[in-house]
Each structure stands twice: as structure tokens, then as C-alpha cells.
Length: 184
Image (cartoon, rainbow, N blue to C red; front, side, top):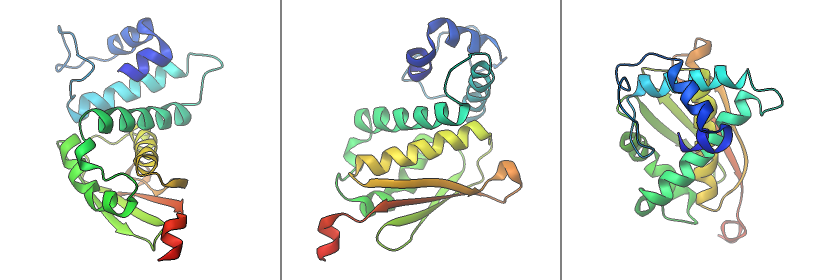
């Protein structure tokens, strides 16, 4: 919510929250650090996406949610999960990704397969509240996790998505080989 308020303004956040009916938020103030149920978070993302369509000259929804994911990773990891990140070690972080998923999501799972020294495939399975906005957001989150390990990211793409009929979402990440890795 902090990202939405910072980028779209407090009136936009209020409009977005008012645009969907959720029992989880009805009649109470949501704190910025509060974790939302998966379906409420999906509803928030979808409502924000609809709001973006009414804002001329703003980033595309894909760009907005990608940046939102990057913000959430940097903000959350630096505040709450810093001890899980071994900076400068992308491979170590990849092994911790399923744990990080379980700490931030109540449902679904993440599985990681290393692809050589400079890539990974991440599968997201059994997530109960999929939407395109979430996938764009997650791609940004993954990009930022790479950045936090000082990887020079090349791409994060989603060639398979449950929103398009796949059994699970498949993300492919790739980064440049660091000079210290080239020597080994």
C-alpha cells in the first residue's frame, strides 16, 4: 500500500480500496506493514490495475506492478528478512527462495531449479489467487532479489502462467556472471 500511495497518491489508494468489497478490510484501517490474505491482496492488485487504466500518461500496468514488486522486495527484505539474505551470493539466495515464499505467503509453493551459474527457473504452484497483476509483481520481486544479492540482472520472464492455462507459473531468471565467479 505504501507503493500505491507513494506513486498514485492517498486519494487513489482510498479509491482503490473502496472499489472492492472484502470482508478482510471492511470497517477497519489497514496498516502498511500488515499482511493481507492472498485473495484480498489479489483484489487490491486487480483494483489498482483498473485504476491505472483511468490515469492517462502513467506507466503501463505491467511496468507499475513490476516496479511495485521491486519495491516490496527491497522494502520487505531490508526490514524483515535481511538475516535470510547472504548478500553477494545469488546461489545461496536461490536455495532460500522456497523458505522466503513460505514466510510471505499463506498458500502455494515455490520451487527453484538452478540453470548453470547464471540462471534459474522458479515454479509457483497451487497459488489460490492468481491474476496477471500478481505475476508482473512477482517478476519484479524476483528481479529485486537478484539485485539484493548484487547480481546484474538480464531478465525475468514468465513463459508459462496459470492465467493462460498452464498448470503452474514458470519464471526464468538470468543474470551476468560475476567476475569473481569467472575465476573459479
